[in-house]
Amino acid sequence: MAAKETVVSNFKLKGREILSSYANFTLEGEITAKVTRGKETWTITERNGIPKGTSDGENEAIYIANDKAIKSIEKHIAPLLPKKVTIKSPEDILNAVAAFDLQLVKGAGPNKKNWGGNACLAASTAFFQTLLKASGYEAWEVFADKSTKTFYFPNIAFNMVCGGEHVPGTKQDIQEMFFFSMKAKSLKEVFETGTKFFRQFEKNLVRDGLPTGTAKERGFVFPVKDNFEGLNRIKECATQLGLGPTDYAIGTDNAFSEIQKGEDLIEQGMYDMRFSGGGKKTREELIDFDGTVVNSADNFATMEDPGSEHDLEGHKLMNARYGDRVQIVLDDLVVTQMRFIIPYLCGKKREQRAGNSVLIKLNQAGTFTETRLAMEIVLGLADEKQVATFLKARGDLDFILEQCAKVGVDSLEEALANIKKGGFSAFVSHRSTEGSSEFLPYMPLMYGALTKRLWFKAGAPNGERNLQNYNPMLRAEEQIRARGIKTVIAGFSGLPSGVKLPALAKAKAAPTEEAAE
Image (cartoon, rainbow, N blue to C red; front, side, top):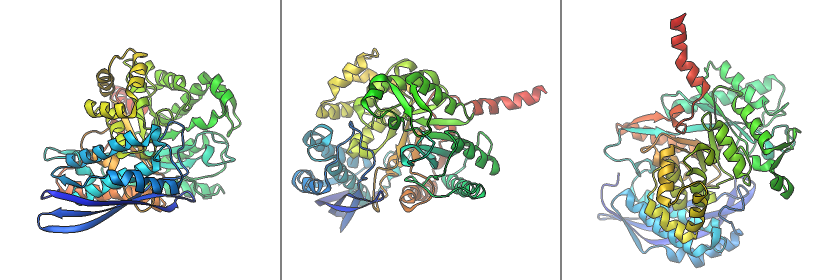
């Protein structure tokens, strides 16, 4: 904790090009500032890289060419930094960044197309990181205080199998398949299990004469017979390691926007299972397919993007059918934008909602504060006044209220209250930072003092970029425990309210059945 008042001043911001992990050049923001605490003064430099060649949906923050983004930082954004920031508590950091980000929202244009979403995010994240490091606070201390007795770490999604658009030529329509360790007593144990699982999975591929190469998220790439082979191999691997159905969970990122490409498919509400050769399916048939995936394992716990970004009705149909059985994570449909998250989650009835969880990506929102507010809305932690301020600055408030009225919700206050009552979860995602930065783990670490409904994915437990997202969490666990705070892995209690997995129900009933015998 910061022992004394900290003053940060003389901010200097610049942008530069750095290599991206996807064989490209991307933008990095760097801030240098003077830090004063008591009689001590020193200089601090922090930087954060922005992903390139990843998500580029039409409703996300719009990126501009790197050279233009660098000029935008110099001309438009750097002059907006405050002369100084005085930090007495973490709240001062959040308020300073919110004030800065609000100027970006007002000046950058719709979806930040005028100044560049990459330029805005590079500046915003570097500013937050600079203030946090200067203050002496850790990310997990942002909302933790002296009354904090328990801290929740998120469930970690280890990518084991890649397919779909990530693997041209595959017979798997589903883009990612995950393994989760759900009963670990510590975060270190989660990673111990995850690494054992990864190595065992690799051994099984070698046993079967299959390649052991990995794709973008470092999950394995190998020829599959159909959409279910990867899921079956995850179950096989779990059995080999002695894991029971309540010790682990399975999940997918379907990324089904990729099988609804082209105006004809979108207009007809049709999907083309082009990777597996499964042919065209109606919306209803696709949701039936999603159901077979969900029901392929009693401990199948989470499914992302069960329909395309153009198919709100498909998502609602999925939630109506399976919203009490599985975590349904909205990514392409809402792209970390408050203007979609609020109306798509605020309905009182399950069939009025598009899902029960939201994927959180910094690169989609375009500033740290908008990302933070999106996450807080989903978790029922948002300040209505601050949300309204940003929505008005974006010009989104009227649209949101119009959309909310379609599900019988009359005000922003009612919408946020309904979402809070819903008990939804937030799933923080990789592909949000680049370079040497360890920024991404800040997001789940900040909220671990407030909620257990947290999930996190940064790929398989290998590869330097993935590990620089995971290792800071191990350090945080050590720090938190040293402070005398109990740490808990979210586990199945991290699921959205009302979701009931068959594996848990069977485990609960098992002792009764034995007693009856």
